[in-house]
Amino acid sequence: MYRAEVTEIEWLDQHTALTSAHARYALEHGGFAEGKVYWLDEFRCGLIWRVQVFKHTAEARKAHADHSSASVYPSQIALNELPRRRREV
Image (cartoon, rainbow, N blue to C red; front, side):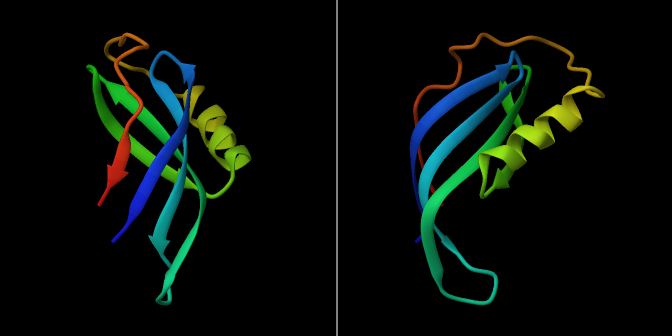
């Protein structure tokens, strides 16, 4: 079972949240690991449109900076649309 407990949500702009969590996840060559993970959550029309996963916050922030200069979004969302949540897969 994969589990994650969200520890923090930081809005980077009106369309993107950086979500931090403590997670248990599968390793590429078998087995499991447990530790801090970061999701870069992008929203369109109030729904999660794309999620990217990172092991380090600096990588997530760089991906956001690289992507945000070229992005155009069709609508804005309210910053309170993403509640604190627990993810289980």
